[in-house]
Image (cartoon, rainbow, N blue to C red; front, side):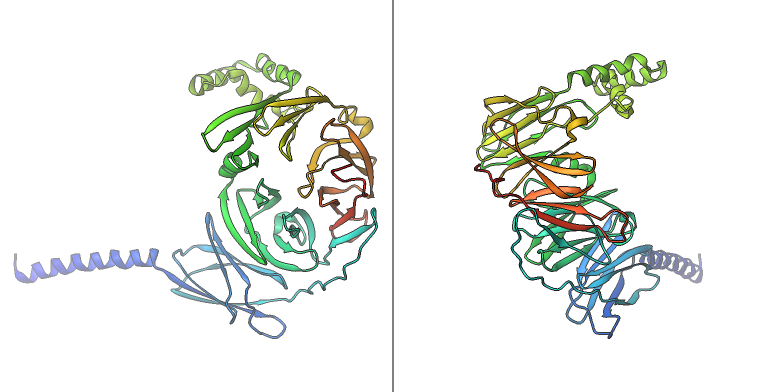
Length: 451
C-alpha cells in the first residue's frame, strides 16, 4: 500500500470519527437560555418571578434576579413548556424549542390588581367574613398552615386548563406557584406540609416566611410512603394500611426507638366483605381462570382479585370510612361499622369505648362522612347537609355524641374546614357570575374544647 493511499484511508477514518463527534455534540450539546421578564405596562424588569421549565419528567425551577433576568443551561433539543408566575401579575405560559445554541426570550407580564390590605374587623359569631376574593381566580381548594397562613389552589377558567397555588396570609398574596400539570386537589399531611395532587405527579410545597420551596414526588411514592402516615408523637408513628379497593384495613403504630410494629385496631365491614368475596361465584370462567393465575403468581386469593376489579365497580361497593385522631395523649378511632368510638392511649392500649349514633339514618339527618379536627385546639366536628343547608356538629371526644349543631349561613358549601374556632369553606352564590370565594364564620363561644 502506497503512502498516499494510507494517508487517504486514515484521513477518511478521522473525518468519520469527527463526524460522529460533531453529531453527538449536536444531539447532546448544551444550549443557553436567557429569559428577560418585564412589566407589560412600562417595560420595567420584574424581579422574583417564578420560572418553571418542564419537559416530561424533567422539571427546572428558578427565579428572576433584580434585573428581571433568568439564565439556565439546557441539555435538550425537544420542545419544553415554560411558565412565568408572580403574585402581582397574570401568569404566562408558552412552549419553546432550543433550535440554536443560544435562545433569548423576552416575556412581558400583564399586571394584576393587587389586593389591598383590609382593616382588621372583629365580628360576632355567625357573621360571614370573606377571606379571599378575586375577579380573576376561582378558589378550588385550600389548606391552613400551622401559623395561620393559607395555601390556595386557584384557577382562572377551568382547573384542567391551568392552576396556581397562592401563599396567602389573609390580607395579601405572599407568593405564588403556577402548577406545571393538571391539578386535582390539595392534601395536608401530618406535619402540616401541603401537597398538590396532580393527575400524574405530586408537588410538595414548603413555606418559609414568604418563600415557597418545591419538591416533586412520584404519585405512587406519595401514596405508599407519605399519605398512610396519620400522626406522630415523641417516639411513635401512627399509620394505616387502608386500600380503597378492599373492605378491611388496620391502624398501626411504629415505635422508632426499638423498631417494633404493633396493630392498634382493625376496621372491617362484615356485610361488604361477604358480598365482595361472593362476586367470584358469578363471574365467567375466563375471569376465574385469570384470577386463579394471579393467585398462583402473587399468593393473593382469587376471590380478592375478582372483588377488587369487579365488585368495586358496582353501585353496592362503598369505601370504608373510620377516621383516626390524636387528641392530647389519646388516640380516637371512630368505627362506624360497629357503631363505636374506641379510645386508646398513646401506646395503643384500649382505655374504653362508647356507643355512637350520630352517623345513623343518613337520609334523614344528612350526615356526610366527613369528620374534621381543629388543628389549633384539637376539637372534632362532623358535617350534616339537609336540602343544601349545612350544619356543623361538635363531637364529645369522650362519648362520641354530637353535643351541639351550628347552622352555617350559605347553602351548598364546599371544602369545609375548621381552624382556631373558625369554620372555613368555599362558596359561590347560585346563578351568579361571581367566582368561587373563600369564606369563614366564627363559631359560638360554647364551641370550645373545654365545654
